[in-house]
Length: 516
Image (cartoon, rainbow, N blue to C red; front, side, top):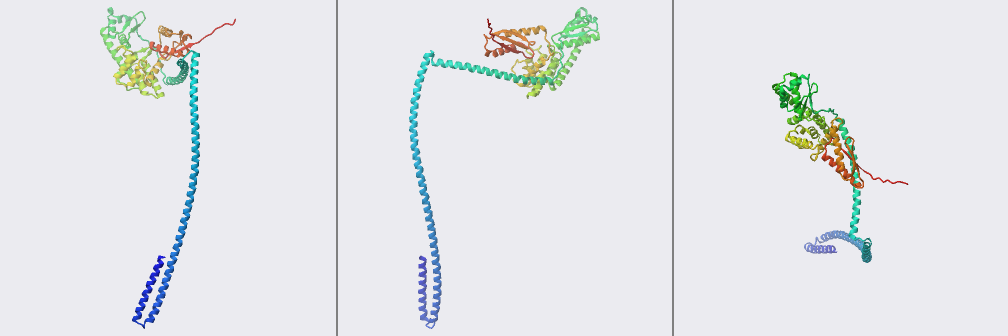
């Protein structure tokens, strides 16, 4: 509408201007008035036409703008109406949820009241039950003539007995399973080791015998007033026994190296034929040098045979001396080589340190080469010597523990101990006098019968098994295993024997009656 007024005002202004111009031109030139009037009229008509077109255009634009504004207003009204409808729906939904919440709240309050009443009833019932239980306990105590604590102690004692019995049964079961598994595994390992290490054994005696060409040499060995034999004994430290045995001289001494020196020297003298104190000293000196060479050579050869050539020279010398030592007739050096191979085989199969087991097995009896010079068990002496020589602590420990004089702390130590027992237990590897054998059997039976509840016992299987018969009225079934363990421990502590000894306990109850 404002634009229309502007157009109208503009037109009016132009009209007034034109009129004023007209009158002004009229005054100037009347002759030109008509033409000017026509011209003005034409211009006015053109201007009017233009103004009308502009007014129409402006009017159309304004009308169209009004139409657009009306559509926009209508659209917004529709949106507002839709939004109001959605608000009404949400209000209705909220009202519905509010009603449901009110209903749930009322139901919750009802249930809470019911639970409170039920809890009160349960408390009353528990209180009543407690009173009844106390009355029953008092009644039971009066009937059983026993207090509650006494009944509890009796029940616990009964449960303890049952649990102890179950535990003993479980222990026996586990022990049997472990023994079966361990025995099969040990049999396999020992069998494999024995098959891979096949060693020959020769039973050796502890005295040396020198054969003579004739009995005439005996007198020459003795010499005038016994001077030759005294010189030979003084130079070697060995007793020379000359008896009625034809063409034989016996050398007796506790040191096998000295005995070997005496044997070599005496053989040299008998071959040479010149026997007198000066020649004896010369022969003994040469024999000692020869035996020293043999000792070094045997020690090095043992190291090569066992697969450990890098041992110190001092260790090899002591190992070579074992060539002249025997244990129950078994050569100690050959035994040491065999133990080294067996221990290395076991270590390789189980996953231990093969080199430690090999070296410890070879030197485990090295203390026997010096045990007459130093006091103490040969295993402990050997361990000290190995440490002084710079060998590893693992090797020294495995060597000194093979007789269980110290606690075994490594698999290699167990392997050496087992290999030592296997080598000593081979049929024919060692021999034992009848007297020592009988003494060992008697000692076994004496140890078993010293325990309470043992009725009798018998050593069987050449002393490798001890069967113990137990009085059932003195020893319970659950204590049989403890008894056999105590007997085995006592045997281990008080006896020396090759291999192992099986302790078998027999407990039986016999009931006899007669039908008449």
